[in-house]
Amino acid sequence: MDIVELARTPKKPLPDTVKGKMYKGFWTTRHVVQLGFAALNVVLGIQFWWFVRALEVGNDGPLPPRPAGVEGWLPISGLMGAIDWVARGELNLIHPASVILILCFLAIAFLARKAFCSWVCPIGTISEGLAMLGRKLFGKTFLLPRKLDYSLMSLKYILLGLFLFAFLVMGTAGIASFMNSPYNQLADVKMLLFFTEIGVVGVIVIAVLLIGSVFVEGFWCRYLCPYGAMLGLVSWASPLKIRRNVETCIDCDRCTKACPSRLPVATKLQIISPECTGCLKCESACPIKDCVTLAPSPRTKVSAKQLALIVLGVWLSFVLVAKVAGMWNTKLTDADYRYHFEKRDAPEYGHPG
Ligand code: SF4
Ligand code: SF4
Ligand code: SF4
Image 1 (cartoon, rainbow, N blue to C red):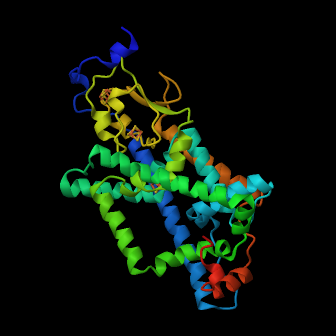
Image 2 (image 1 turned 180 degrees about the horizontal axis):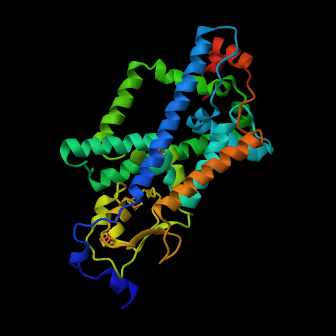
Image 3 (image 1 turned 45 degrees about the vertical axis):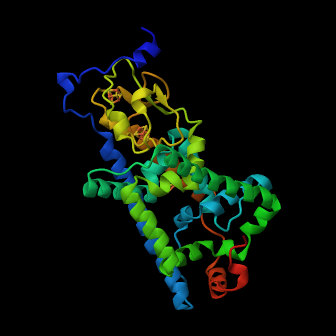
């Protein structure tokens, strides 16, 4: 029987030996990693809020330590910094951690699919929690009609394309100028002030995204996030793929139903979609041991714990090497921050467009 015939094998009943049984083990691992990164972001957020609060109070003493990790929330600065680094051969040290972190997350996407989204990103974690809330409230999350769903999914790629087009128009000189602009020097503080001094429009937009994620799983991530779109495109080249063993598959469809990205796992030999986040929910849902696996080749398997080690190992390596190489902390001094903060409402601190 060839592989195509096997793929078309009619549905087989669930063997008695596995009825009601779920092979688990990785679900907990992913949640622990997700919650660990969420907690880290909370700690970084509090530390940074303290730093900005000291700027607002305006004391003359030394500022509290500023956590460089908050620059993970400056993806545009990070991406432009990476382009600038390649173009000039020198890393701009205004927000170097933003560059290191975006390169780290791209490396994770290459090695382990879009695992950043389902293992690391706190917005992905919140989004997953909101979808769980939706299932509790309504017994399910809702699917938009296929055509509308596909049209909306294209938005994040369009947004990514617009960013890349803007970088192209700016050219390397324009990007270098942006990196040193007053706006970029204060970008981290402005990002925090956006949330602490949020206006009505901002509240409405965030509320729509949060409520939308209760009804439609991953509303922001699936339709609008250009960062996720970029990681997904890089993940296309990843050697790790979700693979289905058609010889042991009983065509129960549980893997497809479990997939938060709505990928048709049960009818494919492998999933190469940029929407796959390596969440392993399909593997968790499958009642047949090792029938669905995340693997670099058929009949191999990367377990959840190994995937966690890859994600954490890459992240730690980038951060530690950057720290040792002096590529982690900003070159801006307390005096620089005080100077920029005082002038933050001046026109040159608006987005350079
Ligand atoms: S799609 Fe964007 S917001 Fe969502 S988890 Fe991925 S990077 Fe985070
Ligand atoms: S195919 Fe599997 S690993 Fe990929 S997103 Fe769907 S459930 Fe997660
Ligand atoms: S691979 Fe999917 S369809 Fe096949 S047995 Fe596992 S859950 Fe069922």
